[in-house]
Image (cartoon, one colour):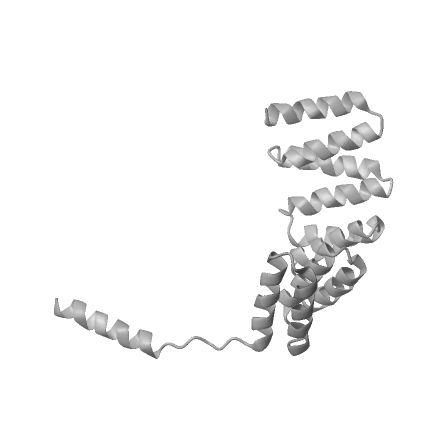
Length: 193
């Protein structure tokens, strides 16, 4: 019993000596901005993200949050500019390249989206959403053969990823290939009755 009480006393002393690092003002503003963005107060969140970035030019979460708010406000050019700054800070994060590609797609620039989506996939081959968006981008620049190849590869390697079936079938219908589209929809129904 004596050992147990000594351990408890030592633990209590250690807990009293531990202090949490003080969070920076930039971090606090970013947390506030995140809360505003989650509450769909995008304009207000932009102000807090910008203040956070002014205090810490390397604050990646603030850049990502700012770009996301701009995207929800449909200010895609501002989102793209922000994400381009972010990938200069960290060019190893697949999420940043993915978001940049999506913003280019939303801005009606699928050809500009392709290299960023490819880079996202190079960094993280498991990013199925980036692969779907890449297929969509290829479809939008009239490269249906590449798009079809991506959908087929997704279906082959990830048969449970139902979005690949749906997008492939929709693309085939748009091309007027109703027989192949119906076969793909049938495969989708077999996977998800």
